[in-house]
Length: 365
Ligand code: SF4
Ligand code: SF4
Figure 1 (spheres, rainbow, N blue to C red):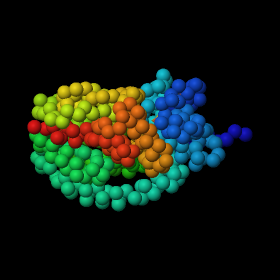
Figure 2 (tube, protein in one colour):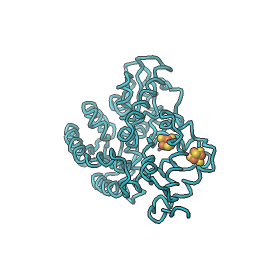
Figure 3 (tube, helix red, strand yellow):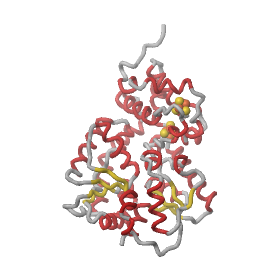
Figure 4 (cartoon, rainbow, N blue to C red):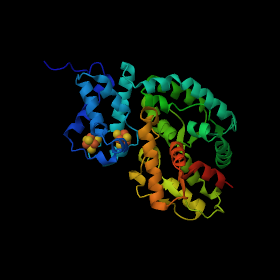
């Protein structure tokens, strides 16, 4: 007798069954793209292995927890999508698997502990955000720096905030409320939708929302519509800076940085050229490149709660990105990236990593 099919219990995944099955007919074209399986050296966490595990859960396999939890063996880097000739949406399907696993009680304990800790994290965010101040009450623009930068780089987040307010000719600072992306990554879809509503209320009445963190920009532009939350125009700070480049001065420091493409900014939102053009405007020269750049750029391991669920893998990815910088450009070069997690990880590995928003803010006349 065959195992009972689980599709009726797993409506989100059930609707994506075709995606989980597609990989089964494929010679794993995307295998070299996945940073998690590359570091761990395990077939079970290739995109193919993760999609197969969810397909087996759908198909009624026993031992559900290890299959369901493989949905968290992903940084959401979207690199597999670049190599998949079938356009199979692996990260999105794994995200559905996370939602099903959390609802069914199969989420990794680290994820449930992370969710329980969110109120404490929110308090810390609010405390750090007070340093940035509320900004300009009646401005048409809202400036959203991103939680990681506000909490871990509070000093420079304050300076960035002042610069972006000048560039935007006034901006309300929205730094004390999370966009909800961590809830999405944890699989808490309802919590994410509630947080999205809360965030939307905070920017209500503004004409545009300018965002510093690529993960937040991706959540606002791509994930909010999926839960039916509408926002004013959302743009990344590099788009604002490019449009207003006549108001950015050339830096006196002649150092040309190496540019690192953040996953969600490049592969996620297609913003490869705007940050490079802004850096070129600021320095007079195109930024230097890593060997793996643009759509092939390497992930630092900080995305989609990978540091929470697979800390050793995330750390190894951070070290690997730092080694790629040093191998190509030698020690001591400054790397500019929009991704706060990448900055943290590169700095931990001894690389001078700086914030694209900070470079922009310091250039405002
Ligand atoms: S994601 Fe695409 S390339 Fe990768 S195993 Fe599945 S079908 Fe093949
Ligand atoms: S999105 Fe990135 S980490 Fe996730 S399966 Fe694809 S390549 Fe691997």
